[in-house]
Image: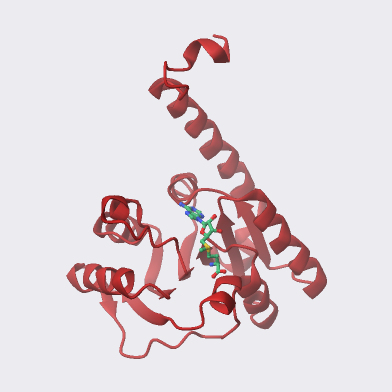
Length: 210
Ligand SMILES: C[S@@+](CC[C@H](N)C(=O)[O-])C[C@H]1O[C@@H](n2cnc3c(N)ncnc32)[C@H](O)[C@@H]1O
């Protein structure tokens, strides 16, 4: 079918076509994940969602060479910047992939790969109430993420948006799967692009319950 014929009257894609494209992206990501060679790192990964230009993960991976680090972001140019930082630092254990989070996790479903550490720094806060459901950290996300994690995986969340921080913390406290840790310090500090712009922030660390 020609592309133009599946457009709706609003110019968007029909549901079927949108689903077909999503499935194609997930399949492409599945191939990219296979090509990473996670078995060399014991099939465990340190994962950053919304890595931006890779400031944090490229520096983290340069320090922890024994960990395989994967950063994903929706925006190609940011992911490319991350790749350039890797080159400068000589990282062979850090990978930046253009991907939407739920699509990446869908691609990960059939793999024998577990998330050991998860970093989420300065995710879009979607400040308007009617947009809160677009926020990444929600009850459903935390329940779903559990299925991809290694035992006792730790998630680190940092934001400048105090209302989002409080709502996210409530979601962690409500969750039967995650335990909020008293010590929220990161294993390593490096100022990300948004942290430089937003120097007042809060951090939460939570461990997957065993
Ligand atoms: C505010 S920026 C923060 C970037 C970086 N973490 C930092 O601290 O500088 C949020 C990033 O998350 C990415 N992003 C938003 N939603 C995403 C999703 N569903 N999956 C992957 N990346 C996403 C955006 O493209 C953007 O680069």
